[in-house]
Image (cartoon, rainbow, N blue to C red; front, side, top):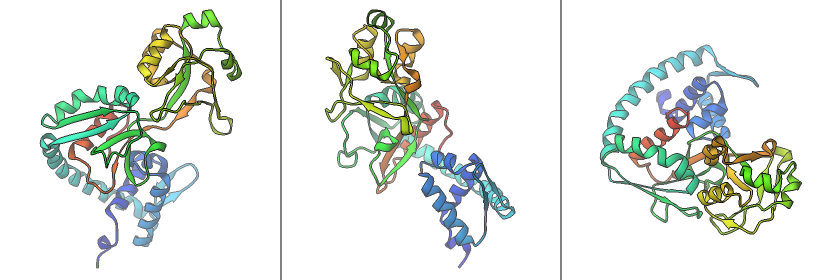
Length: 305
């Protein structure tokens, strides 16, 4: 029995990606894995080959002599395999049936809308159905091929692919509102302002999150207006109704134009990247890989390998 019979192809792919990206964390992001799964894959590969492939330190990883030789051969092999699959994938993606995606509103605006023209160009015969829904649902039981959520909200057991880098949540208000009501200088000052309430998909009111790590705070803010739609929230904030709590990327145009101003920027809260996810019990739709790559490239990430 050869070594090939003992080695998992996906572990070899993890190894090559670690060397290409320069770190376990970067490889995990590119492959849509957790850092722990990436580490376990490398450990498993080295044990099955009975050979050390990587030197690890707190700052970097580098290949051993055996690792360099293996990586060189694997890169050549993966290029040939990728080319062969690419031909098949392009044909399949362009002609196979329907792709059904469930996304929440902000992801639809930031990710899906810009990607549709290129997707239609690459997959002209695929019927793409995008359902915008902020409710948490079971995509499998409701007949979707995939969904988009923040990474920490993806259900367990799903295959995931990161689509963006991390985002920030910020408080923002119009210059008119700030002139009339004053600018909050501390989180405590928000208690004296009219804050636009954020209604979640499950109809619960969202506590605003600020800061990160041990400094993170979740606070209940006052306000008489509750909205469950980002576009309507931005419109209300622009009109001077109150302070909004928004995904910064969603309001970037308004911020750049000066229609909204970010408040307490030092307290901006980090958010996990958006992830595409689908059931591990299904094969991904051939066109889904195309859509994922289109979105990743538009947001400065490399294609999935």
